Amino acid sequence: MFNRNDSTSTPSLEEITNSVNNPLWEDFCTYMHQQYHAKPEFTFSKCSWEYGWNIKFKKGSKSLCTVYPRENFFVLKVVIGKKEKDRFENALPSFCDEIRQIYEETKEGNGQRWLMIPIEDDGKVYADAKTIIDWRSK
Image (cartoon, rainbow, N blue to C red; front, side, top):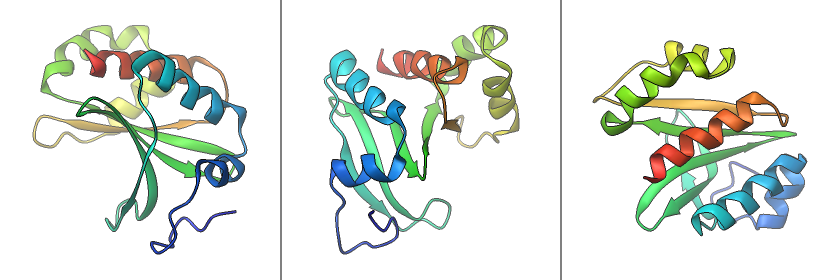
């Protein structure tokens, strides 16, 4: 198991997979590669908000999402920016309760909301998170 807070040792994808210990992690990595040709990019954040290793997925130079590995699940950070805001808010009623709640509880800064979406099972939250990522890709 990797140490999420050890900046001196970059974890491998296998170590992250073993730590997350959730089949959705592998499913998500496969989805991001097949859908957007995005490969995981490991970065270490010294930010007090989310200190430690995270994984970024980009389409070209555009950031699609950042993943924060946890034990038995992972958290997706997806930014709703100025370009996505109106479309997202119009579609908000179609999203599951959890996504709506996350959006409503997330403060806006510089015209953006950084949604932190926990992915624990293959339900509506996971499907909605992929829809939001798809909007970011366009």
